[in-house]
Image (cartoon, rainbow, N blue to C red; front, side):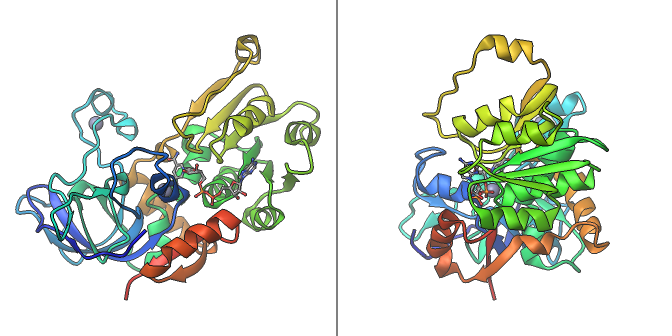
Length: 346
Ligand SMILES: NC(=O)c1ccc[n+]([C@@H]2O[C@H](COP(=O)([O-])OP(=O)(O)OC[C@H]3O[C@@H](n4cnc5c(N)ncnc54)[C@H](O)[C@@H]3O)[C@@H](O)[C@H]2O)c1
Ligand SMILES: [Zn+2]
Ligand SMILES: [Zn+2]
C-alpha cells in the first residue's frame, strides 16, 4: 500500500463528492490487496466510511452539500428484476460513480466496493450516500457501511433469527461480533461464539455471546451440539470465509436449521459435502451479501438503536489511526489485535 495524491473529478450527473471523516479497515480491504477479489489493480481501498457531502451533480436531489452520510455499496437501481419485484435489498444492478478517480499520471483507480474511502475525498454515486443523524460519531457511523451492517444483517435479515433461537457464530472479528449483536437484538436465547483466539472470544462475550468455544482446542461441532441439547444451533453464521469453517457451520446446525455464509471465500476455494447430508439435514443454506440490507431502511434504524443504547456500535472501534497507518492496521487485524481500526481524517 502507498499513500498517493489522486485526482477526484467534480461530480457529474447522479454523482457526489464526499469529504471522508472516518473509514474503518475491513478484512475485505485485505482480500482486495491480496488479489482475493479480482485483479483490477491499482485499488483505492477503504469502504466503511462516513463523511460530509461536499458537492453533487446538477440533477441530484436526495442529498445536498453539508449532509452527514454513511457510504453504502448498495445503491439500488429501482429497475432490475429484483427491484421491480419489491426486493431492492437484492438489487442486481447497483451503481457507482461513472467517472473514474485516477492517479496524477491518469492511471484509473478501482475503488474498493465502488467506494474508495481511504482518501480525504471520494467520488460516489449519489445513491451510495445514506443520510443519518449527525449526532453519531463518524467513526461509529462509518462501520455501518460494511462490516457491522453485514454481521447484524446476517443475523436479522438473512438468518431471520427469532426470539428463543439458538445461534452460533463462527469467526468473531468485526463481522462475526456484529452477528452476535444482531442475534442478541433479535432475542436469541443462546449465542455461541466460536473463534481460534481467546481475546476475540472475550470480546464476543461483551457483545452478547452467552457461550464461547475456542475451535483451536475444541471440536466446535461437538461443542455447539453439546450446548444445544445434542442437536445443533437453529442458525449458524459463518464469518470467516473458509471451506473448513463452512463445514463446521453445516454440521453444527440443528436439522432444518439455517447456515448463513457471510465470510468471503477466495475464488480457488472448493467445498466437498456429502449430498445426502445436504438433503437429509433439510433447512437452508444461505449466503449473505451486506446482510441483505437496504441502506436507506437499515442505517438510520441502527443509528437510532445505537443512540438509544440498545446496541453499542462504539465497542467495535478498537483504535483510531491515521491514513498512513493502514498497513499496520492490516498487520494488527492479521494478528487478531483489533475488531476495527478506523482511519480518521482531520
Ligand atoms: N458478506 C459480506 O457482505 C461481508 C462484508 C464484510 C466482510 N465480509 C467478510 O467477512 C469475513 C470477516 O471479516 P472481518 O472484517 O470480521 O475479519 P476479521 O479478520 O476481523 O475477523 C476474522 C475472525 O475469524 C477468526 N478466525 C480465523 N480463522 C478461523 C477459524 N479457522 N475458525 C474460527 N475463527 C477463525 C479470526 O480469529 C478473527 O477473529 C471476511 O471474509 C470478510 O471479507 C463479508
Ligand atoms: Zn435493482
Ligand atoms: Zn467490508
